[in-house]
Length: 461
Image (cartoon, rainbow, N blue to C red; front, side):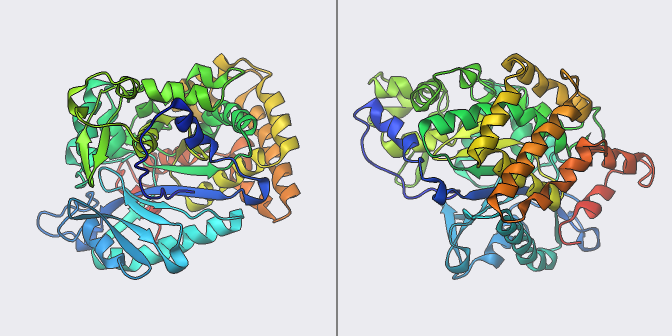
């Protein structure tokens, strides 16, 4: 689910080929799986930081940094992925088949999980990953903390990984939004990837999950700090996305419309400016070019002499960033990275809500009690207020109704997965979000020193 195959070099002769790219995701319910992707910030352990290596600083690629960690993990079960000779990821084999490890622009370390059947398997996979990297990371003097936004270091202090597509994005991002470079270097998320059976099933799941992304943003809020101090926001990660590149992100209105389907998504994708194309293993900077014009044969200098392939379109789909992204599965993209139990809870939330037909139908009825505009405006409100954001009837009331449905969906699956919703129920019932707990610690126990968050959030402790 999370690992693309070899690039498809078939030339695009018709728009139907692009629709087919998405339609290939349709699969019977018996084959539906759960894929979870989670990111975390590396930091220098204070007891190992010497000379130019500052305590809690983000590790560079080399020396003794993120590149060295990838090298320590490489082996028969983790095969190298290289970009211009640089080790920039690992593809799982053997017991890790279907998984991959990749680097976000500033070295945020990501596991893209294998497609698994149950939430229990998601949890086991996450724990195994944390255990696997802890030893090699500590040998290098590194810790890892899953937080939604880098709490201490400014953008200028963040390293850049030697990944060619990131160099293209780094140049282009400031042209289309004020916070794109912060998104690249200072955010971490946890995603859940889920399947659909048909175009109609995809559209229903898209509408429900897109409307409810602000709710999961509020429940999962875990990024109240930036530059060493509180920002006044509970999800600074979500705030960053509000002005990153609005042509390719957010909650596009037409996603909510009746008649939305594969063709409408393809039409939108063709009009979102491109980032790059890959030829012979090299990324060519095509940022700002139009895929639609390329298909129509309109001359665009970076693409001169090149003909678009199905693989180019599949690559282009990975550069779209709506709150729910459609590929050959649906990606839920609205949550801050956080405590392991919270990240697993999010997987349980979406599985319970979307994988039972009756529960999904009821969730759609609940969502439609309010206009789509309410959910679109909620996306901005939860940034600062999380569960206290104004919503008709109260956001906590909505959370309890939706969580009850998710619990029913999990119960009907019969795997005992409803247990994982507990931390989300606690927040819906009035408990503090992760962000609010950190703020409480900051003002009391930490006495205004945000550096303590790295230790307390470290996955190895």
